[in-house]
Length: 526
Image (tube, rainbow, N blue to C red):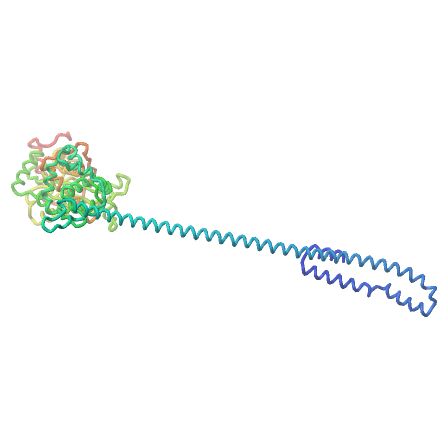
């Protein structure tokens, strides 16, 4: 029993302690009832009444003392156990009470911290909302104050100035609203004492040619003043376009250079290029008349000895940003493989006279098309097939073009004869006229050398304007800075069907033999 009690005490379970306490209390009460010595004593007392009391009294007193000692000892042990149980139970209650108090304090502390943090976050959120509202309000107030001050100054200046009132009605001068930007660079260039060399370096032409273009385009691009702002002058409009085409710099750089907005510069470039293409192209880029054709034949024949040549033809590629539609059509595989960089492009096919002036251009076909397909799509080919302007004359092209009734190209097969080598050398001299013209075109207008920001549908206007401006500079004798020289890198691929006219084959052989017979063939192959 002692082992069981100690086990219950050690567990400190309230239910177990209660059970032990009840058990011990019951045991304690039953000790007196179940004690055999107590029964013997009772019986002995009755005998004392019937028998000899004197003889048995001594024996009963001795046994009674022993049983009383044992019983008292058990009572003491049980009392000690009960006392221990009561102490354990009391300690358990105290521990539980202490635990509950600590838990309440911790919970209260956590709740307090949570409330404080929530309050702090709400205060910070409110502070930030107020701050941003103040910022927005301050920006709005600043803009409003700026506009108010600008209008006040404009009205005040109009009231003070004698020019600010109409002589009859006294109407105040118009109020202007523009963002203040620095146009000091253009103001300096626009001065008449600005150095001619610096002006030519900036706009790729002299001041006289620049004035001619402004005069020609004046009616097409001039704008009227509005109630909000003064119109940009024609000279500045043309200057923005020319500087953008000449340098190829991004619009943000053009904006800072001329003190105008980026969107304004973009709009000006497109407007001026469209005006150049519509107004100046019919005048400065057109197919020559019969008189000039005869002159061109003589000049080309003096260069190469080949008769009836009226033009030198070449096709070049202009890099573009990958378009959103039909991207595969504009992928330039040859340039990509050579440069190890993905390239997209559109084509410019041009025919030039002996001076390097364009007489015909075809712009805008995708860069994946070979030169012979671009030629087939051109308006020049349609005119030739209709029996028009190219009957009985030659336009000289490179090995990337097919031999046609009106297109003369070099021999491309292997194991050429001396006659054929000599003919190819003379054809190359004529072809060099077109290559040099395209090199000057791209060197003068650097926007053709890099990927442009212009949209694909607007690009033909820009490229056409560059060709027209090239012709104007060539016709007026504008010399190009040698530092602007550009080396053409356009791959020429022999078409699948290189011979498309039997008559032209015979004519080419006859011309080659005639050159060799008269000693006009080249000698570099010897």
